[in-house]
Length: 263
Image (cartoon, rainbow, N blue to C red; front, top):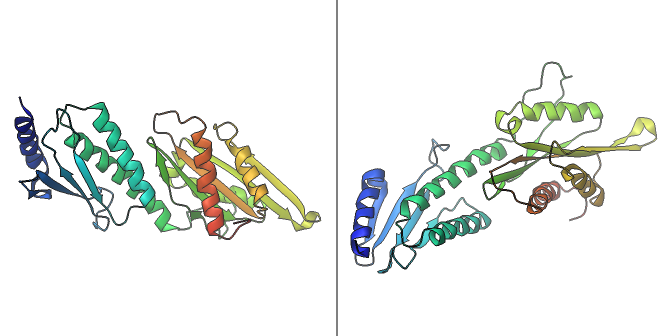
C-alpha cells in the first residue's frame, strides 16, 4: 500500500470516529483539523484544536506537521505536549500516527483540566469531625506534568501545630489529593508562647529526601508560619533527580505568588 492509500484509509477512519469534529481544511495540501473538548469540561470553556498537514511522503518517510491551538494552555504545557507528540512520531515512523497523537492530546487535556479544577476552586475543604474546626484557607498552585507524573503545590498560613494537622486533614478530604502517590510537606512556625521559638519539620511521605528539601526551601526563603505541601501523582516512568526539581519549582512558585520570602 502506498502513502496515498494509507493516508486515505486513515482519514476515512478518523472521519468515522470523530464525526463532525473532524474537518477537511484543504485537500490540496492534505490539511485537516479536529476540535477537542475535555470530558472534565462539561461547559466546554477549554476548547482545543489540533491541525494536521500531511506531507507527500507521510507516513513512510515523513512526520505530520502539527499545530495546536489552545488559548487556555500555557506555553510550557504546549512545549511539553509537542515533545511527547514528536516522540510518538519518531517511534512510529512509517506508520499512521494521527489517532495515537489525538489520543495523547485528549489524555493530556483531560489530566490538565482535572488538575486545573483543583487550582481554580481554591475552596476551604471540609474538616474531619475529629479535628478541631478552624477557618483555614488552602491555596493551590498550578500543576505541571512530566512523563505522565503530575506535581502540584498547596499552601496554608498556620500559627500552630494544631493548624498544620487541620490543614493536612482538610486537604485529604479531596479524593484526588488523598489518592496522590505522595503528599510531601514541610512547615515553619513561630511560637510566641515560647519566646518566639521556631518549630519546623517535614514529611517525605515515601519520597525519600523530598521533605527535607522542601524544608530547606522554606529556610532559604525565610518563610514563617507557613505550611507547604506538594502532591505527586506517579505516571509510571521514573524521573530520577528531575522529580526533586519539579517538587521544588511548584512549591517555590506558589510561595513567591503569596509574597513569601525572597523573590
